[in-house]
Amino acid sequence: MKDKCRKEKAFTNIGLKSCVSVVIILLVVLAISGALSYFIPQGSFETAVDADGNDKIIPGTYHSDGVIDGIAIWRVITAPVRVFFTGDWLNIVMISVFLLVMSGVFNLLEKTNGIKVLIGRIMRKLKDKGAPVVCLSVLVFMLFGSFFGMFEELTTLIPIMVMFALSMGMDTMTGVGACMLAACFGFSAAITNPFSVGLVAQEAGVGPLEGVWLRIVFFAIIYAIVCVFLMLHLRKIERDPTSSPTYEADLEKKAKLEEMPAEKIENSDRIFRTYAIFFIAQMLVLILVASVRAISGLAIPILAVSFLVGGIIAGLSVTERKSDTFRYMLKGAAAMLPAVLMIALASSVSLVLAESGILHTIMNSVIVLLDGKSKFFCVLLIYFLILFLQLFIGSASAKIRLVMPIVMPICAALGISPAIVILAYCMADGFTDVIIPTNPVLLVGLSMANTTYGKWVRWTWKLQLIVFALTIGVLYFACAIGY
Image 1 (cartoon, one colour):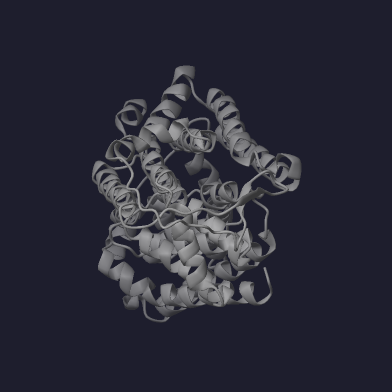
Image 2: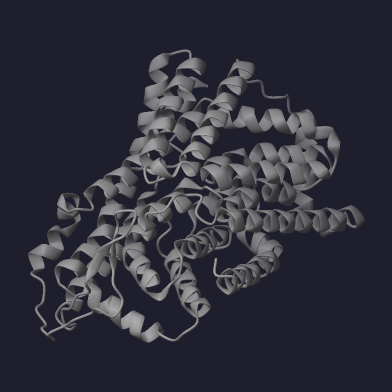
């Protein structure tokens, strides 16, 4: 088992093909941002420091002499390096270190069977509860996604959840839905997800609990929709088992399941206690950071330190060879290194626009264009922008660093609250992860379940449409009440 773990890649590993495609897209965007300086005149807003110490543009103060002075090519080429020597360097470093730490800790959890034991123990206790256990399973996976931003890591449990569903007379789709679909929807219906809520809040200069009440309501609605979707599916296959998209394959799986011995994990009690304490501790830290305004601006570094220290202590407690703890964490962090490159490239776009003097000109053009338009219209533009970028850039941190430095000042000038921006970003960033065929996590998950992408789309497309309509409705409601 140990040798196998050594040879396996970290599950959060960013594939070469995916990395190259995102880097190429960001390089093209960077080149375009430099080229725009040869066509767009320079200009600037007056700025003021708000109560939180953040620079904010003052609407109505834009001034331009109409001068067009293209930025030097060498500045565009060196921007991904120079961005670490600007006033924004600390924010970029904090985000990068945060991602490396989280990836390392989650890799440790996966390699030491922490996730399997935690979820497996809960599932075994609920096994005899019948169909309602599916709703409880959905809740568990959604909570991990919503609070801790876990999605890819939880898809490793698909085989376990499929076997669990089959052992209760259900089908493969139910197992995948209660696992991968639930984790993804929880990630998207984020309450404190550090990878979306946390990073966008950091860009906005607000705490992660800003506007949390509506995100909690939205989470509850999404949870209810997923449960109803799965319950209707279960009722359908109970009446006609052959209506299951995986009926024939499930007959073979059930036959093999009866012959399969139960997998035993050594020291499972110790692993369960250790990681249960670990997650409870992280939840308490998260609540503390979010509720104490004096430290809410430091949420990302505090969470990074908390996960790092807690992860090391937990790892040392469950591994036989203490060196494995650091090896697993370093391997997980190394797997996330390409994300640092993506963050640097995405951040360099706003640097080039600022250095060329056209960033405020672009902002002013957008503000003038949207002036007099409803807030809902403006929020929808942000929503669809993130949806469009989601097709090409899967990394949440890269998207945030690419668009938020531009979006946030515009929203502030238009009177759109950071809470609405956070909500719109979370909605646009995640739900499509389980429908877009270019998402490697989706394809890996379906492969684990031994089912096809075509069957999955036919099974979930109506659900995706319902969720899409719901997100539009919730955004409209948020704008209507001045959220």
